[in-house]
Amino acid sequence: MNIARPAASPAWLARTPTVWEPESQAFTFAHWAPTSSKEDSVAAWADGAQSEAAISMGMKQRRTNPSQIGRRLPGVSLATFLRWVEMPEGDTIHHAARRVRAALVGERIESIETPHPRHGFDRWPERLADRAVASVDAHGKHLFLRFEGDLTLHSHLRMGGKWGVYRRGERWRRSPRRAWLVIRTRDHAVVQFDGPVLELMTESRTRFDRRFAALGPDIVSDDFDERAFLRRLREDDPTRGIGDALLDQRTLAGIGNLWKSEACFLAGIDPWRPTGEVEDHEALAIVREVGPLMRESARGTGHQRPSRVYERAGLPCRRCNGPIRSRGQGDDNRTTYWCPECQG
Ligand SMILES: [Zn+2]
Picture (tube, rainbow, N blue to C red):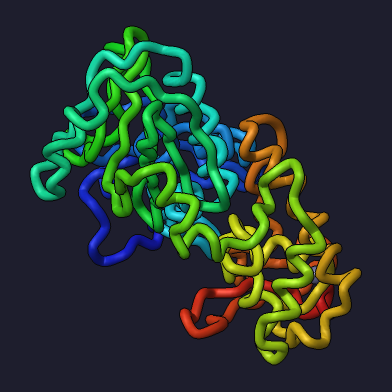
């Protein structure tokens, strides 16, 4: 049997020995650490919060028997699995903010580089020269590095960007060619890879920027505002499916496609039910189920990014044993996973 691979799988994937261990429900990668300086490696997908998530899901570092290489992952292509492990949602961004904060705040910035030739950040090093990083915070999927002197750096990773924090001399887990921004202190290099949204603005502009002003309450925040969430949910189209409505960052900041499906499952709510037919206590049950899990994931401790339904289409439900279903939902046709039996 072979791992189901996309036609255009990157070369490293074809070279990466990977097995699915039915007895432990675990993926095993033969090489966990970077095996080369190629720009993609397994470790590139399994860094930071994701590596801890991967460990909690049972990915282990160990050698595999070559004869096991290429076993099929039941119902999940390896590429899909890796995308899931990597997908930045609010918990990923908050986790990145914690690591970046620990590396930069209170430390002397030794250099700021913008190595990527395409993006015209030429003047950033001089604009940011001699400024300390006063704070680092996140709201939903947005990350802000606030420098002294009214300059703030805003980042949004979308599907493929990444923040890396490395000790000086440590090998980066993506190619330096993909670095858009490198901030060095005596002990660390903080690297933003692959953008795709990275902008420098005045602090006052961040307060008036309509994109940020429109964001709903942050589900990863410790003081998540339930009333604001409900108010914004009720302002939305009542015919919209609740699963789709949860993705709207104006209603609720931080939830992405993975947590959307998990949240509806945990609360026992059909993601297709029109929002207008979801009672307040049911909507609150959704955020109360998933909020603590996302906060735990953001802290990088304990129970992280479990999959009860996400990417499990056709597999038996962990509660009722019935088949998990999947279908595209909403204007963006994002795939929703649910158990029709448990979420009736
Ligand atoms: Zn079920």
